[in-house]
Image (tube, rainbow, N blue to C red; front, side):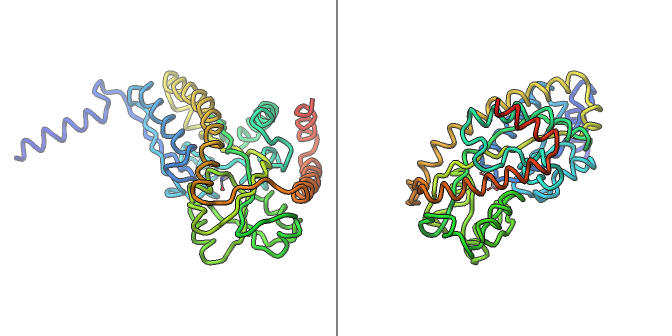
Length: 324
Ligand code: PCA
């Protein structure tokens, strides 16, 4: 028996060394959203592609739903190298540098073509910012358009007054404040409890997140406002990346490119599929009233102006390029 165990142990070690004695690198990848979400599934495919292209010499292990690091800690973990790679909602970092919030300005870019154009002009600034933090952008994928969830019809901004407003980034906090609501930052894994216990009354998010969190259990209405398409970004610690072999680096870059293309397509499908799923779950899906639209647009203008003032010359240049 002892001999057998010893033989098995030797076999395991040689498997771990990749047979030919090649070194193996293992990366933990913290992500904020649940396993079934399309961003997480996309990241899992990215990890599988890297595994295949490197013949197993670079393993990326995904820790979904904030299980390894909570969402607000993921970027810091990657900067410090505690986790070499990670995913966040880009605009969660909007208070650290205005460029992170540029994709979440209400009614600036409301469809996929506009969101792509905005991403293209924003990308160099985003890369520069991440680089200054010791990080490298790997890929970015938008969520489907953002709508308003509530427990009754919301027909004007006035209807939001005094309600507890769930936020996922500082910009929504500002929207809530301008609407006279009370903002509370809550991550997706905590949403069902937050609604069930009355900590929040309304939220702005995608059909995807509504379905992921079974919104029908705690909400009744979805107002399809298509206000913006926030992006998730995946980044890698530059020093960790530099330690990879050239072939491994190429595998990561190629898999990231594929993940970005696949993710944008998945997001478009997701919008259709999950909006239908909300209806099937008996959520009342409705168009925003003219009054609500006008009220939200006005708030959007205020927020865009505040953003431009904070973002300085780079931000203004970016917006001008986008509007061309
Ligand atoms: N879902 C995420 C961010 C944007 C979205 O559609 C959330 O609600 O936190």
